[in-house]
Image (tube, rainbow, N blue to C red):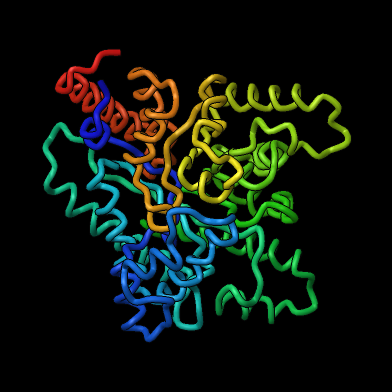
Length: 401
């Protein structure tokens, strides 16, 4: 029998977790007080009641909390502390490999460069990694991490001081093209810093509202990182349909897809050129399966941002399993969604027909499909260590396939 304790102890990944959505509330309160920032409440209970709720009306309400978290993440000390605490929070519930994503341009200002922002987050994660790994037994998989930089599908001059300056410098350029340039600038900055430092940048991402802001505005930036051998993930199929996912894969060379929630939703296939919508969706699912493009599944977050799902059993994760797609359990935002990877696994086990063998495969997919910072040979050694440790826990808990 799969127990909560077994789920907590098995080595896990979190491949889709936003730094600015995963603060500790006491840290948010302390930083806001120190920086003289306004909050709707300065108590944990008050913020949970007014901002970080158990349920949200829609995606827009879900995203309101990010304005508060980002407001206190405008200096290196805060960024380092938040990254450090996130690493520990993840490790304490069994996460051994963590890929932290965020949009650096939201935190850049006249005093804080791209290198400053990335260096602070990397420093916090490395500090936690060193402390954690110094206490592990020889047979345990080490704690490892990667950093994913996010471009934004949509932004404007109000998003940050950096965005304000960038839009002002390009005031004769359409906002559509300014966003394209911002994305390309981030891609170039990410590649340059990865190549000239030991900051553990592993991938490029595209986040933000899908509807009205198609991925093809970012083909230049994704072509650039693709040609420079950086891995790629894309938020797609979270608010739009299968065509958005197809575009992410074919236009942006996506190695993984963030969410993919509406992959099987024929009602969200809008192109008049697609006559047989059901066939289109099936072909897309087979295309994803054949290429082992992993879906970063965020069950709790999806329930909160898309209330029309209503019940977890209506989540398309069931179809993902039926189509044998490569999936991985992720938190998305540990604070905003009040969740952990262990809770996501438990939710899935209670809601879907997942055998012990299937669970093991999903967990191991997370490690295999990670954007591991070190060489492929080291990654293989790391994954083998994870598998051995997992199988020892199976024996200890008396779990058979």
